[in-house]
Image 1 (spheres, one colour):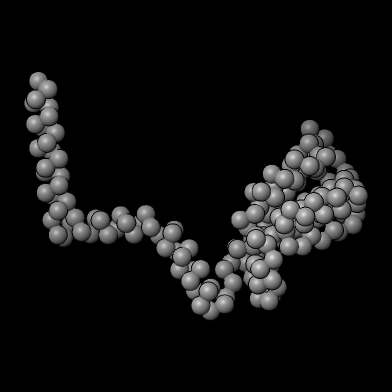
Image 2 (image 1 turned 90 degrees about the vertical axis):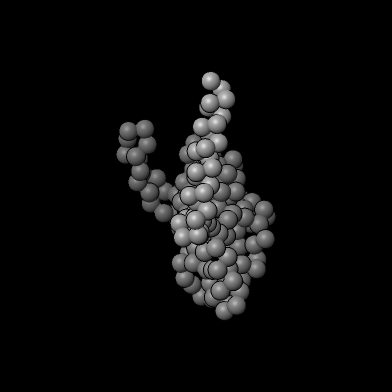
Length: 163
């Protein structure tokens, strides 16, 4: 019984190998499969190579993170801590934004301080984790928006300023 199964498996495997080894279908299947599997990697490499050769910006390499804070002292402390950890190249502190939001089923209103955090997209998760660890809010706001375009010199400065 077991020998019959092994023989049948070998026959099926042999047939599959023979079928895939035909130049027309096997080669095409292999090329298509590898192309689909490698596309994200090849696309990224192509963009980086193009950027290196032309000096152009790769859209989405940097992000703008929005963080609300309850008061100016906390906003400044968080901004300084972010900068000291090189999680951002710059932080703007915008005073007294009026905020309305739903919290635990009730409409709330508050005056908050908005931080605009300029960073690399690759740093957003680390930035988010750090802000959640030090922020006084139970659920701190951190929303990240990809930077599509901008002043090339500024974007280059951002790239060079954040490790």
